[in-house]
Every structure is written in structure tokens, then in C-alpha cells.
Length: 211
Image (cartoon, rainbow, N blue to C red; front, side):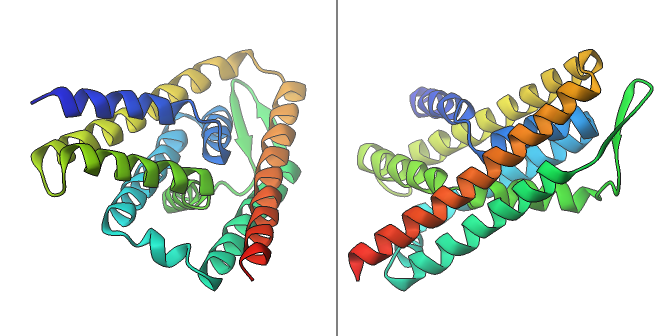
């Protein structure tokens, strides 16, 4: 009974070490804005994973990656990443006592939406989930208890590991100085910009090859 659940946990740990845009933003947010803000971002990532898993399970991914739709969704996703990257790179950071503050602190919904769309716009996550869904349905069948246990194991594990990332990042922020914080801002910003550019280039190449 617990075998599918354990398999889901293993896959969840695999996702946890994927260093995509959401991973870097999660670390950065926990350092700059605190544990609560980091957890809100992690919650957005969790919702995104759940939606992606459901879409792949229902076969909606075929619509998104079919013909001209792939170009549209790819361009939108790449643009979102680039915009987040530019904003992150240029963000001003102020050190006030033991707490790190930034200008124009967003509300809770903003963090959740940011986590959702950063994860949702990553094509590697789409590919990963599609591969997982195809594999697990071929092993356990469709609409079975094993399927639901497997998916539960994945989602619970990914959220738990994201929580751990937030907690560790929040704890080490007291050892960081303004220079290190500025470097983190620049690295995260550049990482997001690069991910966005690569996504757009790959989409254009794939679309040109299909034309």
C-alpha cells in the first residue's frame, strides 16, 4: 500500500534539488524578506506543481505544446522570467540592524503568485511532470489509489523540502553582509534572465523546425 507513496517521496526529493528559477528565488526571498515571505513563495510553487501535475494528468499539456500554442506559451514564460530577473538585479537592499529590508515590500498574494508563475513558466518542470505522469500511469494504471498515493508523496515532499530551504536560508541571513547580499541579488537576477532568454530561444528554434 505504501510503496507508491514512497516512490512519490523519492521523486519529490529529485524535484527538490532541481536548481531552476523558483529555487533561486525561494532562497533569495527567505534571506531578504524573512521566513514567512519565503513560505508564501513556497506555497505558490506548491500550487503550481499541483496544477501542472493535474494538467499533465488530464492531457492538457498536449494543447499547450501543440503547434503555434507552444510559441505563445514559451514566449510568455520567457518574458515573465526576464522581467523578474531585471527587477531582482536592480532591486535596492538596505541593512537595518539584524533585519534585511527592501523598498516596496509586496503583499502575501504577490509572493504566492510569483512562486506560482516562476515555477509554471519553467519548461523543464513541464517536461519533468509529463515524464512522471506517463511513467506512473503506465505502472499503476489510471484512477487508482496507487496513483493518488504517488502524487501525494511527491507534493508533500516538495513542499516540505521547500520549507527546509526557507528555514535554512532565513537562519544564515544574520551572517551575511551588504556586499554578499548584493551579489546574491545579481546572481539570482542573472539566473532568471538567462533562464528566460534560453526558454525563448529554444521555443523559437523548435517552432522554426516545425514550420
